[in-house]
Image (cartoon, rainbow, N blue to C red):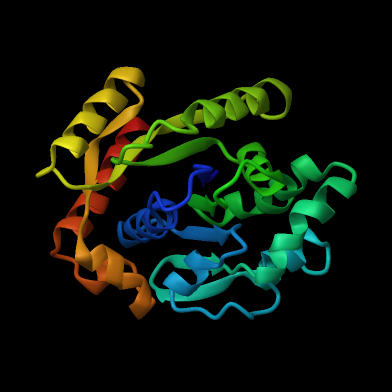
Length: 252
């Protein structure tokens, strides 16, 4: 039975999609069948793996009931990694989904059969706490929270953790926080060092030891439609994502 991870943070620009794409690629590289579901209308995970934004069917068609999940699954071009692409149409789901009875559990019910085929399923959430993110939290076993080591790092984290608690109480009691991963870290600056110390103090035990550095290879990889571990497997960013994947596996 596979494990489902939601990659979530309502703050944008924190390396959420980069973490989703590269964590999924690292797990697939280790030999585990992996599925990445792009639940973000911006389609960044889709494009970051070299797929077009206008592919049909997409996760929007699946959520709308117009297609089965199996019909939307596509190969990423990387061994062991499949993708369910997103679509800009998914932006309308924030309005449409609440009108559907049982909308909170819809993604869970649709993704559940994938557990039989994939050891890991990653859900890349949009930068918000709207219906799509809530649906992903209901569907997930664990939440991975990317946190940028910048001044506003703690902003919104309390709201995200509160949302997770509400989902645990009312919709998904088995949901747990896998951990927080510090991203875009520039260890040369006092600010990054201070933010890292503050996050580790506030969320003792929840923060992964692995820190993802600010790295040009990580930033440019999506423009080539490849995870950084395939774009430049020996760069500091690729090494860090491999270490993160190992730490995630060790935490179970």
